[in-house]
Length: 347
Ligand code: AMP
Ligand code: TRP
Image (tube, rainbow, N blue to C red):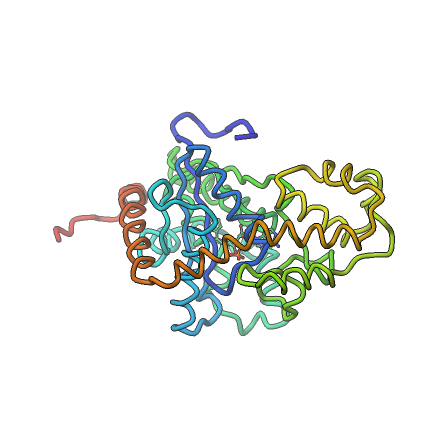
C-alpha cells in the first residue's frame, strides 16, 4: 500500500470495491478500477469485489438486460484477472446485509450531506423531481457496501472520491452517535495514471458508458478494428507531443492519450513523454491503438468464452455471496445490537 494506513490496528486491511452492471465495461472502468482490483488481489491483500445490482436499479433497468449485464460484468472481472478463489466476487442483491445497513445509514446521513453529492446533481440534472428516491440515497447504500465488511481501503476512480468522503463521515457519525469505535474510517485508494480516463471526443469530460457517442469511449467488447479506428479519430490538437509533462498542461486531449498509454503500459506519463517527445499524433495514435489491442483483446476473448457458460458464472457469484455473507452478517447483527433493536427470533 502506498499510503500509510491511518485506521487503528483493530481494523485489519481489507479491500472492497464495486461496479454497477448498468451497461458494458469501458476502458475507464478497466484502467480506473478493474486493473487495479487485480493488482490488489495479486499483492495478497484480502479483496472483496461486488457487482452492485441494487445500485443499478436506481435508474430503471430492463430485467433481462440486467441479468445479462450482471453476468457479463462477472465475466469481465474474471477475464481481467480476478480469481474467485482468491477474491470474493458476488452480486450485491444476494447479500441482504447491504440493504439492511443501507437503511440504517439513511438515518445517519444528513440531508445536507446528500444534497451536496455532485454525481447526483449531474445524473439528475434538470430532472431532479422525477428521478428515483433511490438515486438520491445511493451514496448511503455505497457506504453500507463498504462498511458491512469494515473495509479499510477502497480502490476507485477519481469520480468516486466524494462518495468515499461521505462514507467516512457516516462511519464517524455512527461511531460518535453510539459511542463506539465500530466502523473504520475508510481510505480511498485513487492512484496511477488511469484514475480519470477522459472521453476521446472531449478531453475535459469523463469517459462514460452513458455518453451518447460511442466514439467517445473504448468498450471492452470492441473489436480490434473498432479500437484502432476510435484512437485514430480521437480528438487532439495539431502540435506534436511536447518534451515534458508541463507542455501538456493546457492540452487535455493530448494529456488524456498520454495517460491512457501510461496506464495501459504500467509506466508513468513522464516515461511516455520521454519516449515520444516530438512525435506527431500520426505516430503516437497507432502505437497507442496497438498497445490497447494487445492489452484488451485477450480480456475480450476470455469474456466471450466465459459467457458461453452462464450457469458457471451464476455458481461463482453464489459461492462468492455465501462467503461475503459470512463476513457481513455478523457485522450487521452487531449493528442492530448497538442501535437497540430486539433480536429474539429463533428461526
Ligand atoms: P461505474 O461504472 O460508474 O459503476 O464505475 C465503476 C468504477 O470504474 C468506479 O471505481 C469508477 O470510479 C471507475 N470509472 C468509471 N469511469 C471511469 C473513468 N472514465 N476513468 C477512471 N475510472 C472510471
Ligand atoms: N458508486 C460506484 C460507481 O458508480 C459503485 C459502487 C457502489 C462502489 N458501491 C461501491 C464503489 C462501494 C466502491 C465501493 O462507480
